[in-house]
Image (cartoon, rainbow over all chains, first blue to last red; front, side, top):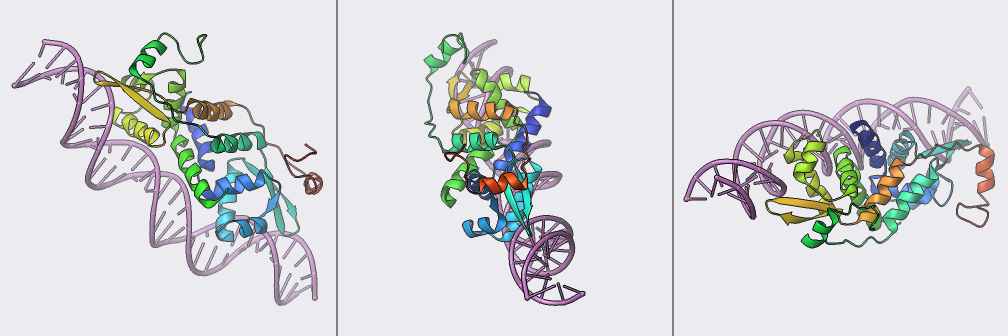
Length: 115
Length: 115
DNA sequence: ATTTTATATTAGAATATTCTAATATTCTAA
DNA sequence: TTAGAATATTAGAATATTCTAATATAAAAT
């Protein structure tokens, strides 16, 4: 992964890196929602929700269509967002390795034929 | 997703949310590496690498075994890390929805029987 | 024992993110 | 055409993150 790509991807990750934004994304994964819907769901102000939606829009994670004065938001890269949310909700037990396991791996890179 | 869970998950995401840390994780996905290996690969100081490794350790994403004065780092939740890296490297074209699509979806929530 | 090698920690300045308060925009309905 | 409803934007204070410089620790080699 080169420097430029790493920066791009980190920017994308940052869009996910806030509790309110994760909750907004999780809610949008269930269906289209307007800001009023989210206000009922989240313990934060309308202004703050709009600010977080702006971050999500700039990251290309959500889009919206107008519905009168309201805006109906939806996931614009559903597979990416749902994939990340699924990984976060899955259980990933921490593995510990011993010196011996590491030594053996040095001849057997991860993803190689011995896996 | 409730508030506590959202906070926990956002903390985890933050560990990924830095270009240098993404590169460290990508490198560890290829196999065990010590800090010296990473110094050769990354355009940052040893101190900075150690600081980022400390963030990754606190998030439970990496572990290490001693090898003399060196520390060999490895992914302690490889499926989580590799899953996130795979999602980030995959192409996820942005979809735009029309008013009509949204209207239709209102009776057909995402993930429901009509998908 | 001392030096060298490998890595970690700490303090603080620089920078970026987040939230609050005030205000603006845009559409609809009266 | 004005008022109300829904949402967005802006400025700035509060907070968190990151980097640099200096220093510490721990094992190995001399």
